[in-house]
Amino acid sequence: MKRLIVYPILMALFLCTASKVFSAVKAGEAAPEFTATASDGKNYRLSDYRGKYVVLEWHNNGCPYVGKHYKSGNMQRLQKEWTGRGVAWFTVLSSAPGQQGYVTASEENEYVRKMQAAPTAALLDPTGQVGHLYDAKTSPQMIVINPQGVVIYDGAIDDKPTTDLEDVPGATNYVSLALEQAMAGKQVATTTTRPYGCSVKYADSGH
Amino acid sequence: MLARRAIFGFSLALALGFVLLTCATCTRAESTAIPHGTLELVGENQWIAAGHDFNLGLHFQLETGWHIYWVNPGDSGEPPRVKWQLPEGVTVGALQWPMPRRLGTPNIVDFGYQDAVTLIVPMHADGSLKVGEPAKIAAQIKVLVCREMCIPGTAQLSLVLPVKSESPASDARTRDLFVAARKSMPRTAPTNWKFGLGEARDSFVLTANVGHEISQAAFFPLAESQISNTASQKLVPTAAGFRLTLQKSDQLLKPIERLKGVLVLSGGQSYLIDVRVGKTGTTKS
Image (cartoon, each protein chain N blue to C red):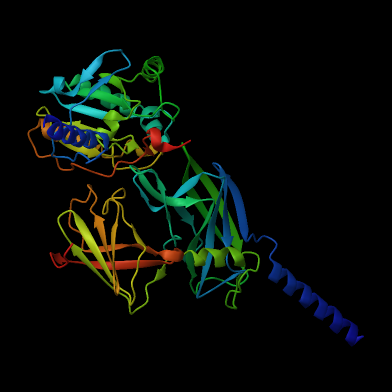
């Protein structure tokens, strides 16, 4: 009798977890929990940062749109400014092994050192677990989470979707805007935009 | 004596006329390298004339596997951007984009072109153009070329076209290119085709009445951030056409009044449609 009940339930559970159902998290919704190992060797769990603002920065060191923000020093400036104001800033590396942007822990540490970047940690996500959880489509793509664990911004880093370095200074930075507005107790004016950049190189990217 | 002078004068006139016709400084096509391909600026016409329209073409030729993006690139990428340097009296219209292809992966859907594509550039020369003074038209083109990686490129191209009084004749050398480009351009839908757009909370439903059942249809929105690029477009054939459900984009925050885009039917037929959004609940999904 037990078998008739248990097996169908097990089958149902198996089917539910086996199928990848990417219902994309949207601004205004709870940020899904994750744990990831960073290039410093430590594990980072999102819920450990309840009570702080968190920024997730999708990164691919070969993408010219990411290059625009690193060559200009823009991303490093943002990381320094906001971590200095108590924000936990995580660079997320979701490229699969063999794809552009995939890095080992030591390669990422070397990159951070060379670029004088200042994230709280660089999360290694080669299986794309975190990327798929947040439906990250491009690098760069930025997600801002408030101290209550709610996504308050999801999208482009700024309003200049180009690879041109000269477009950095005059751009409206959506990350800084969201953090400033939320920290001041105001409503975040722009909660979502189309992220611009190169596609995130998950395992199904081909080549 | 008179006859010889006449012959001489006539020959001179012929020679001058020939020089004016051939235009030593004119270039009707220019090509340059871009990442993993070439870009050519070509003219459809041998010359331009005051008060007449004419067309140029931006012909991209790409190495196998590399692509560029449509005016709406989709989830990632960026379309080519053109800055024109035009002489007095010449104006440029909106780029004409051939029917796009769906590229990318199930989770990241882009729109663009592989192998080769020609964008047609409609132009107009107004009455101020002077016959005999060739017109130089230049363009700076920024283009993103991608395969497993993306490489941005910049090209600077120019043409020098003769200015004549007769209406522009087509250039036999570029004729095939423009014929092929026009074949792949989305057309205006026949006037007897009727479209409606219903709106539900998370989707739009495009209904088409074309006079017969349609079993294959896909919609490519012209604007970004209106329709989800990854969601499948559920097609229900009807006796007179079809109903196509289009999931809204997560980035669609404000209501839209119209939905414009390219409708692609079987056999590569494509149509540019512009449908007004109906009231919520007017269409049963």
